[in-house]
Image (cartoon, rainbow, N blue to C red; front, side, top):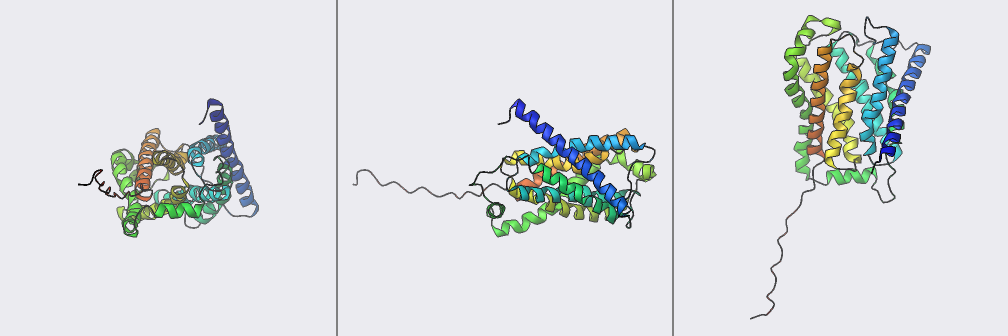
Length: 305
């Protein structure tokens, strides 16, 4: 159980994880310049370089804190946790961010997208490795990752998984359109006006993109559904918080070119998306074991007639 002292120590370690992400990003930027990779600069127009650096530093420190609950509740070896966090961070902050920027803004092009994705690899690996140290060490009797995988899929029959996995893929588009409709009157006029390089693509493109993002999010989240060793409610909170920050808050904290109203609306929308999506994933893919009711045998009479 965490005490005040251990909580403070954990918070410092989480902030150090965020600092490692900053250093890794700076290193990748310097390496890209040396190798002439032409990594695009996504700093908001009209914002000074010093202000952009301060916003990135602040968001990175909070990133370490936001991912700590997920790190604390994950089991497995340190290598397994490193790989799980690497894929989660790379998918949510690399591939997903690239897709969103390509579809909804003019800040990236198909030619500049690959160097941007490449620039996310080392920071994701460095942050994932540092977060793997935050989890308490498993005891010798703890199940391995393969055993945890077998345990998860043995909870339901194969027929049940045939509809659960497609339902998990459709889960994100569902919550995306439900909560997106709630903030649409606030954010859509800004996109239609093209303010700050925003673009509103056709609905058919948005729908297809959400299916792609949902599949990516499923792959990013599945390792933690397997490695998790706590209660399902804690997993919903930890996974929802991780999605909220990596998919939304990290970028919105630095998007000074957007109005405050737009940033708040999108923050609340993505927060609702993330926690609802995490809840659906946990309910679908981390179900409780099916208990079989066995009829109790009829007791023989104490004194036979």
